[in-house]
View 1 (tube, one colour):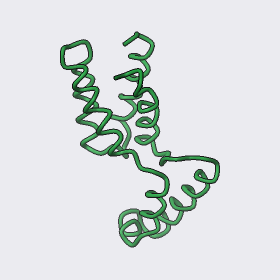
View 2 (cartoon, helix red, strand yellow):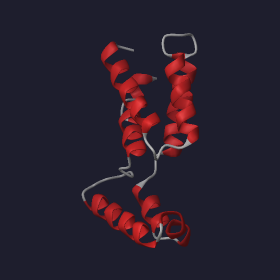
View 3 (cartoon, rainbow, N blue to C red):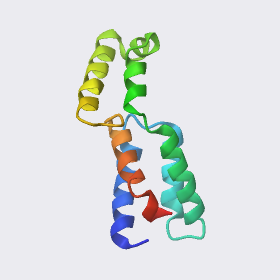
Length: 118
């Protein structure tokens, strides 16, 4: 992996770890990847990291459905859930495929480099 790619993915990985919306599983996978960079475990941890990010990134349709659900209203509060759904519909109309929270944005950036990482 070239230094430019490594620096980019490392920066986005730190963004992911620091995102309040990042789940614990993704933070753990990110930390394991960072620890493995430059070791014999790098390839294995990269594969695990990519798999975790693919499992965790939220497609825009799922975000809308969740925000409009009773569970979404309970989690976010009714007004916030409505605002999230409206925002998600707006970014979907401009072509967004995924949630644009900080964690999903970082995950999407990393996943865009999958072919170069593996």
